[in-house]
Amino acid sequence: MSDTSSTTACPDAATLRALLDGTLPEAQQGTTQAHVDRCPTCETALRQMTAGGESWIGMAAKLKGSGEEDPKLAAALERL
Image (cartoon, helix red, strand yellow):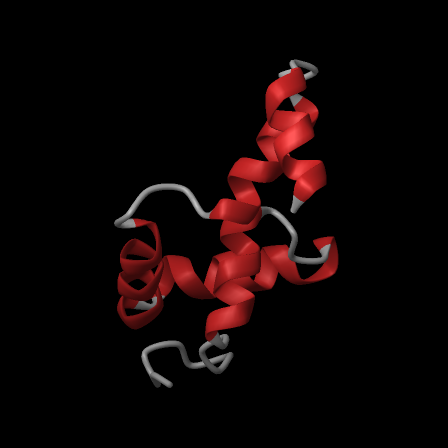
């Protein structure tokens, strides 16, 4: 945790991941984003999380909402 933000403690990794994925509850988004905007430690953590590209959960959400379903992909997912 970092004390670079005088009003809030650094969020944990799961909260930062949820912020990236767009799954963080709306009530937490504003305060979490405001903290990250002024906390170099959290900003670095977010950069590291995204260094390999978009998270799988975020990508799955985009694919689910894209309206384009590949029948072969759907069949493969069903087998999982």
